[in-house]
Image (cartoon, rainbow, N blue to C red; front, side, top):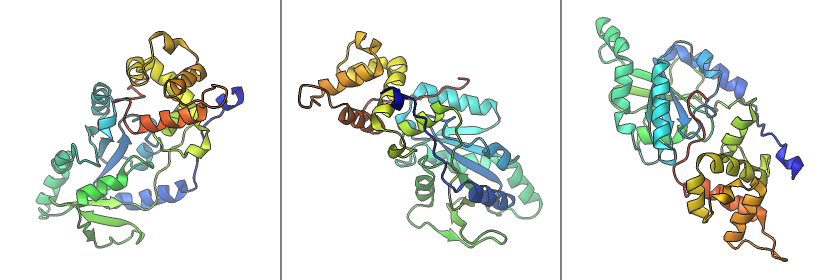
Length: 290
């Protein structure tokens, strides 16, 4: 078990250079950038290179999957981004929660651009927005929801690879979906763990028991009450080591093998599945300023 505890999540697919190039090529054609983050891990689910790549373009941050995150912590993140000059809202792209305000938000963020267009005699000129996000943050769900069933494709813009797609979403706004995705770079092992918790990193990278123990370490510290309620644990149980706690949870769920031992691998898969399915409650793993 000691060896598996030392495993560090590292996962660097080879799309980074291509995506970086595409963003740089497309940037002159857009007025602002919409970045999708996972509301549970806003820091870990963003790419640190994005600030440099998008230069001084206005930024709208969508804290997606807000229904699975701690509401109070999400409000802290919205204030955090506001202090750093970026507009952030909590949304859930699958249900559409929070997205009704997106059109007016774009027009507010780009008020100066709209005024400039009007002064130049182009009052109806489309507002163009690039959509970016690492895997599993909901970029495709957002575009599908905003473009609705029609997914109206706008003609290719000159100077951009033909694989880029533009979608008209109404109110004079067009979204640019760049091919490929921006992958995270994580030197901090905690970032890799958090991405694994939410399923952004393939489960094959680190074994389920190791991930479950790391998840239990965080949950017992920050959300002990919810953990106790879900698995009928006592407050004293939270002082157990992560492996012993995983054994106890498996035992309470009847996951026993020959000899009366707990099937910890099965218990680990169950714990991860229930967390990702939202059955443990609304949980956040990061706070601003940590």
